Length: 116
Length: 117
Image (tube, rainbow over all chains, first blue to last red; front, side, top):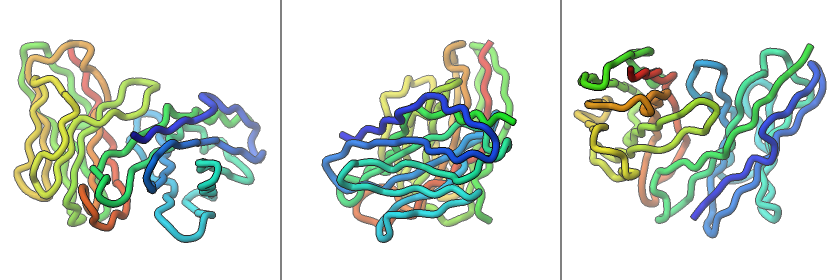
């Protein structure tokens, strides 16, 4: 079975500072990895995804993430955050191949609080 | 069209009411999903439809009844709900669902916020 652990429930950071939101996963098979953002009272928006190829993935709004297979991690980074980045961030995983049931497994979420 | 549209955006219903949530996509996606999200929690999978057939039911109570009339439309019929069913209900779609088919990612709708009184 797959699982996702987001290591920080809340991350406070000042505006224009860099940020890293940490995500580790557990799976016995190959996976697809995702980061989603959820603004208050809205649905989930895809920030970026890792399917294959380059381990450094660039997404929308200046975010990027690095897939590290040996450490089973997929941490999200942004070099300079804005007030508007304040939101809930979810890391998620689904499996490849014959074990792919279409089920997306989410981490518990990290609240990014950007302060002026 | 690259969106998943959910209606209504807000719904208040009594415990004896019958209501339906609607989800629509025109991206040609063949897998569609219902998720339930409580406040400050991640979304929880309820149902998966793949090629208009129900492929996963995550032991959801029968007061929730999904329906997939065609490849673009997904409904969730609600009956005799409890106050603890109040939540944000999210619909999502993806290019393919099960098996070895190539997968490109999920698109979520903005959700229906349901309040059961």
